[in-house]
Image (cartoon, rainbow, N blue to C red; front, side):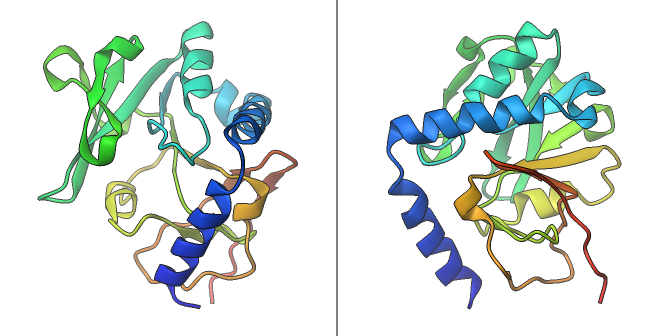
Length: 191
């Protein structure tokens, strides 16, 4: 199945979950994240601001602040297809950006380079238990993660785990995927 078709049908499936159900599952997933070492060992955590159908990372961000972790969120440049991460200290450090997604206000937020980020929570539309990831098609994360040496994790609803995803050489693999029912430590076979 081609990427575009998987992306469209998966987003449709996720949107069929009620907001209440998505919120409940988001909390379960984020609670599981807090049990693993890559979370416990991270001081600076990068995450996205959620779109309506995505896992509600606002819970993750609030947990970071409660645990005195630094939170950084992306600002995307859609012309250059690059992104940079900025530290936010409160939700008031955000403004509505591209696609209606909250982005950091550059003038009032400190830019954090990728060498300083301990853990990146990588968003995606679908995943396999081998760690293959299907993103939204912009390639922002695949580009950003080149030469990144910190930890990676993805958060996914159980329904986002599928058998197979067509991959390309530049697609990054995710070592840990957390769903509401399990923590999947992936084992990509490099063939």
